[in-house]
Length: 334
Image 1 (cartoon, rainbow, N blue to C red):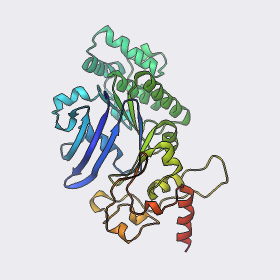
Image 2: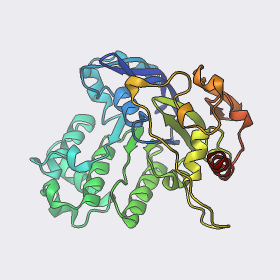
Image 3: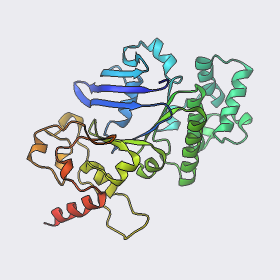
Image 4: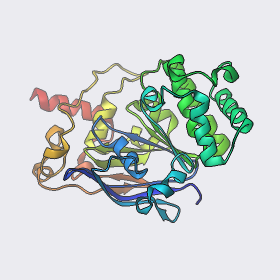
């Protein structure tokens, strides 16, 4: 399938410390995959590794298959044609990602020249069209503006325009709505959804915002401490989270309707990669951990149609996040 990409046993180490422990993911054309988890879970590192954007000290192994080609085996000269062309990425901080010394036209134009072979007037016309597409007012005049002359939301739109300039098969959006107000967030997400419908591109949405993920994504992968601990269709995950970590994330969401309930915070933090606990990395924070959880590393295994979880005691867990919240509170009170 054109545009499909598969990560197989992707691992990453820095100075001998492993931070990704064998990531397996597959994204098909037109699909939207959500990647969620706390900071430090490895979400951004996964895709920076897949695109060869990590520093030289990083040791990356596994396979990143774009159709029948392994990106990890490609030299930078070959990857240049893939990055921004077949696969584009919107980075978390647009101000840092944009070059403050170059105009917006120059930066979008580099992508258009490299991946689509445009030049001269054709670059200006297409750059204007892209700025119009992402909702930048007075696009023709603002082509000659610099990033500091745009607001945060407008810089994010410029980043999206640059990402779309290469007409990618897959767009990786790393926290594309961070620090934006709710109205601008909705406009950015609507723009991405519209582009998907018109082009058929796939989308990976890296986000802490579970509300956004529930509305935008088809499928969700939950990451914790460099591993995928649960993967399921979005409806299934939100209605019946199986992993205690997923249940804890859902328990932190306020209910829009129904009786009010106390929100639950997951105690502790994501462990440092250099000092992971034995067994399941989530066990020290898990209200349901048993002896085996501190001794064995659970493998991702299917528990239903298109639903996988990496948990030794997941079958004993309640199906809904609210149950997780209540039982955790009871154990704490006891």
